[in-house]
Image (cartoon, rainbow, N blue to C red; front, side):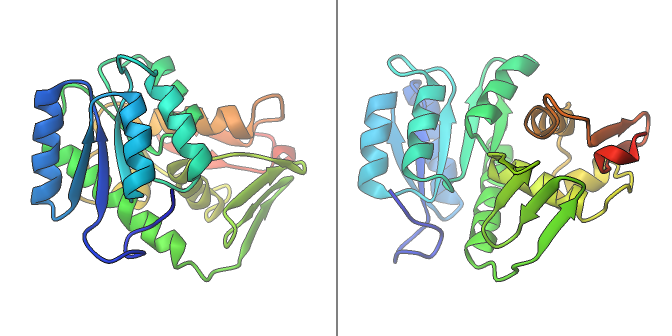
Length: 241
């Protein structure tokens, strides 16, 4: 299961996985109106089978399915195509549930109820960034303390240990590393990592910062810092506060 926008002839293919037929149909209509081709599936097993057949450019995946758990489906999709953009849908808005999805490899999420415009906007951003990464020629390397990010291979290591990030987490870390020690506001992060036309809502930035900390800082001296009332900054561990 491979592919990226433009890698095959025809429209962008979006796999839609939700066990509610009415919602699946509505999402399919929204995807069609956005100019893409929907491939609906009502459960996890049919989703995996459909994915192998259509080689989707992106996936809209419900977190709760009647057979395989949404996270199980996500992990299997990731095994077959690590770069496939995945947007999770969930009715559970607790922080730990969203972190579980991000940890499993989701690139973004929306909580039910949601607007179709928001889903399309999130998908458009994921597809745009996937296309940008596929055409990346930048071989620059960001180094901050014992943290190393390699731009062309999308690899991240801390103290020599590989760190697995989702596409959105990579974008966030890239932004932080591009401005070491500089405090970036939530608005700046939303503007650069998501879209200037997307207000983000809720605690989207906090969720991704928390997920990134779990991967970058867990068991180590912290590098990602919260500056109360202002935003977030990344500093080499030896810089302290």
